[in-house]
Image 1 (cartoon, rainbow, N blue to C red):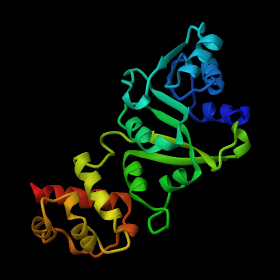
Image 2 (image 1 turned 180 degrees about the horizontal axis):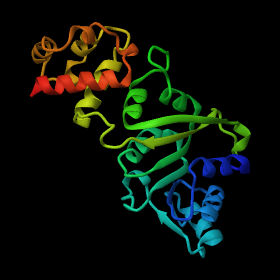
Image 3 (image 1 turned 135 degrees about the vertical axis):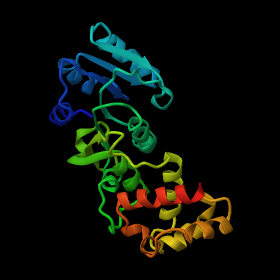
Image 4 (image 1 turned 180 degrees about the vertical axis):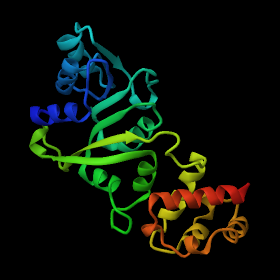
Length: 252
């Protein structure tokens, strides 16, 4: 990204201060990095491309508050003292990056996403873009779509639109009291058949969350009828979590 207004907007949206330790994923040539360095106490820039790492080291490597790390972020062990993330992330791995970030103990993440992905994150129940992604992200964080980003803000301009999103992770007390693997498997089962009833969706995708269909039918007998007669497309995230918790309890 080369648009100074948007780079500055992202830093402002994260409220970067001198006592912050900020992680940047995929800094490229370091344009956003420079803005972060003027505000943050420390910036950790994680870049996989060796050519970009060399550029960063040559241009910014002497800065006392910048650490340049050559690594795949998805395999990188993020330091515990990182408290904010600001980045223009690679769109092709948006989902795994997002869920890795939401496992961290951070205050906020401000990220640029492909617009379609960002719109799915903030979609309302019942809308065409409401999805498993919507549910999982909103159970773990407060999600705000802050602004669109014009294609001319990038060199070369991408074929897709982009948006800036702010994620504020929820506390443990605010997150659903259900095993994450159970929640993920139930959510996957529901949204494979999101226009059917919850009962039928769970039966059709019983392999996602139960040993077999017989066990699935036994579990469904113990679940509230009002939940089973709903359609996944219309279930708010909190109701999906409620359903997953009920299934977890019934499975023992």
